[in-house]
Length: 115
Length: 114
Image (cartoon, rainbow over all chains, first blue to last red; front, side, top):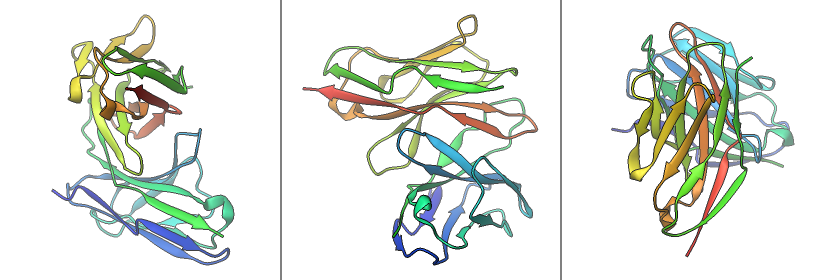
């Protein structure tokens, strides 16, 4: 099982550049999300999706766009990179089983540096 | 408001001694509670989860956690630490059902001394 696959693993961007972090899952999960991880702050939710064609903002959405055209894919776009977006990004997916905890499956992470 | 507090940012133990990582939560709903582990430069891996069944939950690699509603706690324990347990651990609360809200603790870094 591939699970949740993120690319690229490492990326260096110049301020003002744009880029897309790719995320794909092969578990037919309805829910997908993007988090950023910064030292001492745990994981913070950027955007999430409850199904194809449906997205919503999380805790820290500014500077990022997402789309969900298929169940499998959930790309994260940085519109105009800023040094404050230097972080580790995690894509995640989960089932939508009502009445029980939604176990979240994480990708391996994407290390992004904006210079 | 819902929140998760991991009471220690760092915990240091000697190999072979018990591990205790503390987590308290605040939730207006019946929560589901998780512990995840993150090894350096890796993603998060599920250790165990509580979803309103048995209050003592056993996970992978010898870890377990006990849900105590009266104390709003979900502490993670292991009887005997191994060097490979050195990692960062996250306590997580999710509100399932029709919604999707996940709250992460700030993490606890576990150091294991030889």
